[in-house]
Amino acid sequence: MSQARARSSRRSSTPEERDAAYLVVGQIVAPRGLRGELKVRVETENPDRFEDLDHLYVGPERRRYTLRGARQMKGFALLLLDGVADRDAAEQLRGLFLYVDQGNALPLGEGEYYQHQIEGLEVFREDGQRLGEVTGVLETGANDVYVVHGPAGEILLPAIRDVISAIDLEAGTMTVRIPEGLID
Image (cartoon, rainbow, N blue to C red; front, side, top):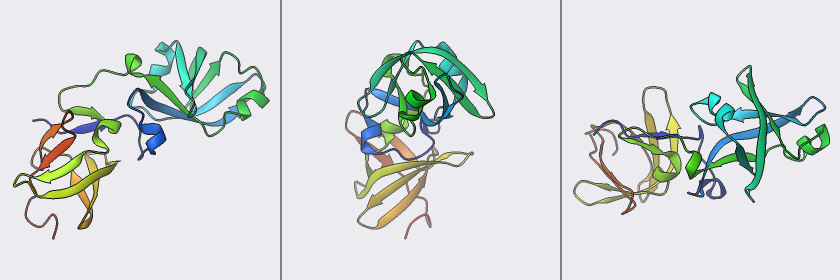
C-alpha cells in the first residue's frame, strides 16, 4: 500500500463541512473592489482548479452560484459569482466556505483519500484493539498525520505504509501497526 494521503482541506473540518456530497475548496475571506469580486483562501491542492469550474456552492445551505471569473493573486483566488454584483453583496458572503460537488472532485491516485473520508474512521490495531476515531488530519509536508481520539487520549499516527495497514471505507475502519515507542 502506498502512503495513505488525505486531500482537500488544509485543516480539520467541522461536521457541517464534512458532508460527503460536497468538498471544501475555499473560504471567502473578504470582498475585493467594488464589483463583487471575492478574495478566497484556497483549500485545495490545485488552486488553478477554479478556472475550470462552471459553478460553486456557497455556505452551509450549499447555494449554487455560476462562476463568472477566476484568477489568482498572491496566494489567494479572486472569484466573480453571478448574483454577487457589488461590494455589499460580497461582504454578506465573508467567512463562508466554497464547495464543489463530487462530480467536480479531483481524481485521486492509489492510496489517496479525501479528508472527509478519513475523518470519522474507527481505528484498530492489527490485533483488534480499538484505539479511537480519526478526528482530524494534519498536513506536515512529508506525510499526513491522523489525529485519533480514544480511551487513551489523543494519538498522532503518521500516514505512512509502516503504520497504516489498511483503510476500509465501506466498513468505516482503519487498521494500524503501531511501532514500538509511538504510543505508551
